[in-house]
Length: 260
Image (cartoon, rainbow, N blue to C red; front, side, top):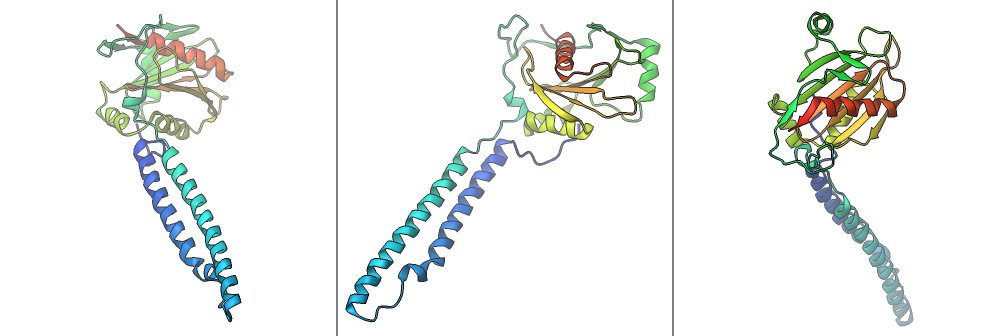
């Protein structure tokens, strides 16, 4: 899975932003203080009375500048220490939940295999699947891919693709380095999807989003999900509504990822 190197959502990026903001604030305070030096001093006094007036004026001006500096410093500190980053995907996903809602043990064995049927979608196998695999063999998928016949008239109603850290060391490294937000953004940017919308990710946690893709045959919907150990997506050719597509994507996920 290709992923841009800079993750603006990560905690390390946030830490860098904090240091940069503190440095910028210190520089701004110093520049304001030295740039207003002549103005704070005021005009040159020509008499004792004028000297008192100039001193009073200088004091007022210095207080004004000090007030400005306090505001700048306060804004900088608030910005620096309220910029929170997101932990890497490997650490961010909540504990897996069983469909009944009970917490699943972190040591549970996870089995990933395509469901034979998901609603109106039927898994293609044998020669049927091989035919479509050959048509798309120019670009080898990350992880594993399956084809489904759908409720529509097209020969393929859905394409399910799942990759897991158990199979892909590069994915495992990416999830230790990048956030789920960054990962999902890259998926939909790479697919040039539009109207991307986030939905509830279901009992396994993580993130789930769906968006429209443009094609010569219509507007298929791409749904993708990610958690600490999995990155997956399903392309639905027979759906027209993002919310309904998200529900079907959850069925694909729960039917193909088992915690036992």
